[in-house]
Image (tube, rainbow, N blue to C red; front, side, top):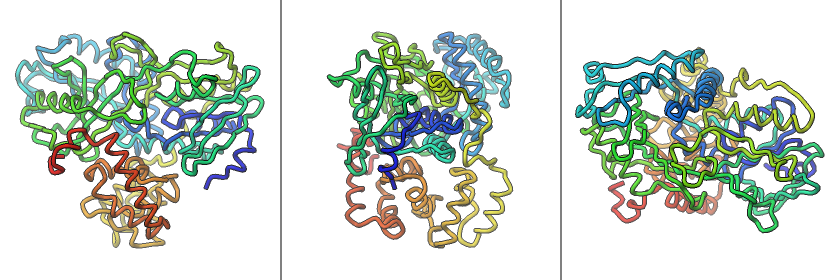
Amino acid sequence: MRNWQTLETTAFDLIVIGGGSNGAGVARDAALRGIPTLLIDKDDFGSGTTGWSSRLIHGGLRYLEYFEFNLVRESLREREVLLRVAPHLVKPLQMSIPVYASGSRNFWEIQAGMLLYDLLSFDKSLPNHRILSLQKCQQLFRHLNPDGLKGAAQYFDAQVVRAERLCLELVQSAQAAGAQALNYVKVTQLHHQHGRVTTLTCEDRLTGDTHTLQLSPQAVVINTAGPWVDQVLAGMQPNGHSQDRKIGGTKGSHIIVDPFPGAPKAALYVEAAVDNRPFFILPWANQYLIGTTDIRYEGDLDRVKAENAEIDYLLSETNRVIPCAQLSRADIRFTYAGVRPLPYSAGKKTSSITRSHVLYDHASAGISNLISLIGGKLTTYRQVAEEMVDAALKKQGRHAPCTTQQELLPGAIALNDTLIETMTSKYQAVMSREAVFHLFSIYGSQAVQILALVDQTPDLADPIVPHLLDIKAQVVYAVQTEQAHTLLDICLRRTTLAMQTNYGFDVLPAVTAILRQHCDWSEAECDRQIQQYHHYIELNSLPDFAMTEPASSV
């Protein structure tokens, strides 16, 4: 429950607007340094760019092409930190780059890039690259298109299958350190006097009520709203418009398909023939994630969808690389799109816009206690947070060391930990070994808390739907412990049910039955939530072609 009476009378030293990975990282870093912190997001945590990313923790191999060596080095260093502090969520991922005669890069250029990548990751725990001859490449990837194939390069990066849960654990860590964190709270106005933001007007989107939040005399406001940065800043201006545009987002779209003929066991990093843009074919949660595109986006930031042309582009290019795949629109299981919060760069080629982040200090515009983040990547959220908190402390004339390079995330556990075997044995009478391991692969050590719900109510060990490993206790846990307020929160971000069950439509009856029985949701509330869910999915995920073709074709 939100205690607005307490919140309205608390003078926070740091208010973070935007609860994606960067904002959650800032709140966590600040709270761990002892700063009274409030994190707010107008939607759910991780529901924007973080949740709609390619789910990679990578060094940015292609940034070498634009000589962004500092960004690559920073990304590679942060990749190593995440492999250490979140081993249950971030896993090594082998990537293979098929090299074709028709490609825009020569084999020697790929080899040089691999060598430089290894040099910049000199302190990594992952293996160095290797170059595959044509013969070796064809042995390992028998289904690759052989026309013009010259060989391949292999290297390691990392993958976070559930990026939303990484963000959520950052929020949980911040809360454990003393921060307040609220989702579904929208900042409607930043009030400023004498060159400082003094109060914030907010709307609780769960109740519709308006509230005013106070800032301490030394408080700093951090704007990490991603693509919505300019919208937050518009709340400072009398005319409702920010003075100059900071964000020029580009849209990246993805499709999810079931395993298909010729599907690679390892990830492929391929150059598209149409536009020479690299895209990924990634094993993901027993399915395949294919993406991404890179298109300038000027539309509604709350209504971002993969267009038919983008979907067909990803299908066509995948079929070109793996001819026996023969993927069609009928194979699509889920689509999504997100907007990268890149610096505004009119007329510049989208792929050449820097992926480096910028801390914009609004002191230059006359507001001394406001800093906005322009850019920022999932991989480098921790470094961004450290820089942000350092900048805030400098404004406050204080200093406190950053500890996030060593601080483990709440669920951190190795998946060979003896705790997993102990829990598997304990619950083998009510759950399969696979189901217990599945819980630990999602929640890490926090899976014990879900299993505790099973101790109290044994039927919560039952699968939500027969063909998936997710159990009923996960739904209850999401509502009781993880600040899930909607079916979208439960099916899209606390679990991946939506991606695995016909956009989530097939699982809604089972989920709402659990909510009625165990979480006191009324029939009317469930009906309202189902309507809201359908509306969101149709606007943001269900392909346009699926709205006109028979349901059996999607």
